[in-house]
Amino acid sequence: MLPIAKILKSNGIDGDVLIGLLGIDAEEIETTEPVFVEFDGLPVPFFIERITPKGSTRAIVHLTDVDNLLDAEEMVGREILLDAEDEEDDFEDFTGWTVYDGGRLVGTATGLEDIPGNPCLCVAPASGGEEVLIPLHEDFIISADPSSRALTMSLPEGLL
Image (cartoon, rainbow, N blue to C red; front, side, top):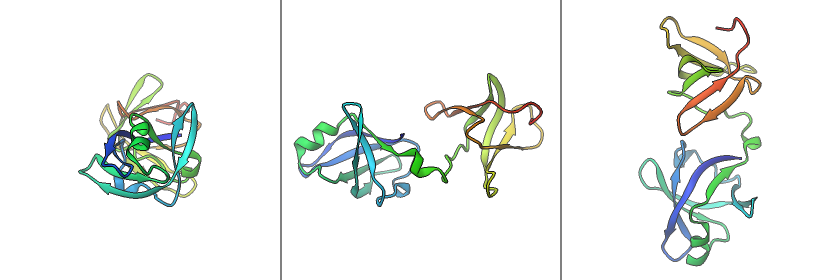
């Protein structure tokens, strides 16, 4: 599960909630696919019936079956999650993230080169020089920390 937002507070009496977006724009959220909210450690699916952007990092959302203030208040503080398996062909935009090979600084991601069957991360080396392409393969990714915008990878010997 991939967190895309946090429910900040209820909004009105009809079940709407104010959410804080986590590295995604409101327009990027697909309303035809379910989102999930954890209750008792289990992801519960909801559909977004309505989403209204409020600036670049917040939005007012109405979820299915959240129809009153009491239901909305129960959601406050919880994260809205996407099923990462449904997103297997869409890659995170790591632009601006710091890239590490183990504990060694590689550089800053400048974009994604979407080569069919082999998407690559474009990285400006910290030591200067020409931009390098690093295959964005799940076997190479150790961790991705959105809060610090750090991508830690384990790259094959000689790739850099």
